[in-house]
Every structure is written in C-alpha cells, then in structure tokens.
Amino acid sequence: MREQFERQLNELRSDILHMGKLVEEELLLALKALDTLDKALAAQVYEADEEVNRLRFITEEKCFTIIVTQQPAARDLRAVVSVMNMIVDLERMGDQAKGIAKVIPRLSEREERTLPPELGQMGEMVINMLRQSMVAYQNDSVGLARFVAAQDDEVDDLFSRVFGNLMQQMAQDSEPDQIKSSYEMLRVARELERFGDLATNIAERVVYRVTGQIQEINSD
Image (cartoon, rainbow, N blue to C red; front, side, top):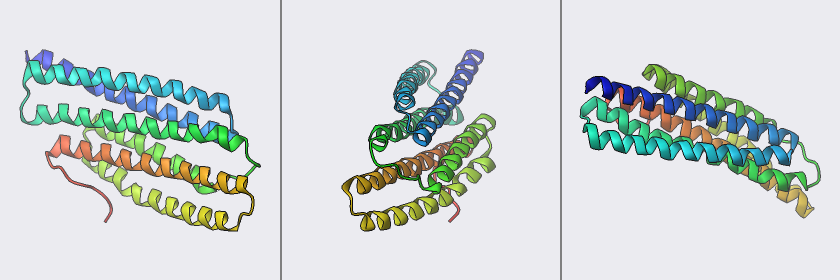
C-alpha cells in the first residue's frame, strides 16, 4: 500500500511540474504576441490555456481520490494539500497570460506606441520566478522558495514605475486612442504583477509542504 501511495504522490509531483511548464510556455507565447502584436499568436494563448485548465481538473480529481482512498496524515496530507493549492495558482497564472493576449487585438488597432521597457523586464522576472518555484518544489528547497518570494518586491517596484509613467502619459495624451493604448499596456503590467504574486504563492506552498508552516514569505 505504501509503495502504491508513493507512486501516486510522485505522479502528482510530475503533474505539477508539467503544468508549470505549460504555464511557462503560455506566458512566453503571450509575451511574444505582445511584442509583435500578432493576433494569431494571441489566439494560440487561448488554446494553450485550455490545456492548463484541463490538467488542473484532472490533477484535482487525483488529489481527491488519494485523500478518500489513502486517508493520508501529517506530511503526506500536506503534500496533497499543497498540490491542490498549487494547481489553482498555476491555473490563475495561465489566466494572467490569457489576460495579456486579450489586449493584443485592441493594441494592434491603435496608433503604434512603444511598449514600456519595464514590461519586458517584468515578463523575464516572473518567468524566472515560475521556473525557480518549480525547481524548489521538485527538490523541496525552502531556500530557493524564499529566494523566489524575495524577487516579488522587485516586480512590484517595476509595476509601480510602469503605473506612474503610464498614468502621466495618459494625463498628457490628447487623443482617445492614445489614452486607450496606455490603458491596455497598464493592464499588461497588472497581469504580470499578479503572475509574480502567484509564483510567490507557489513558493509559500513549498515551504508549507516541507516545514508544515503556513506563512507569507517575502523580503520584508
């Protein structure tokens, strides 16, 4: 029975890592579509998100089955509960990527505007945070999980900079299309900032899985 249980737990871990990879690919696709204002690529983000959602529900059902049939206790139960939380966070991260894709058709119709450089920096940072959170989960690394969380402050700082610059730009713009373009870019920044928050959530689940402690972890 124990060997079967271990196989089920290992399968859950594989599912999380696979789901994390799918979300990473989805965000990379959304950022490429944003950079090129390619509506066809943006449509592919929606397709990728459907697969992320499908895997979330499959994995959730596996978790319920384990709880009902194995009745895990202590550390084993934490492992299952952590997975149940992580799949929700990963699904929401996919939603943030889809949120970026949503603005691309509208941006492509506006007068050409240069994307704030901070958006590219935010995108690179949150992708790395996701990758590192997956490695932390794979290796039960509390140290790496804390390192992921510490980076969220920098993402927040970049968001604040974008927010301030775009708000100032909107105040100066005289054309409605220009204001709308700035607003759409602000939405992108918000999606990326939220993506970083969710990567931090996953890092917190790693700490909970390993230590049993439920707590926010950041650089404060």
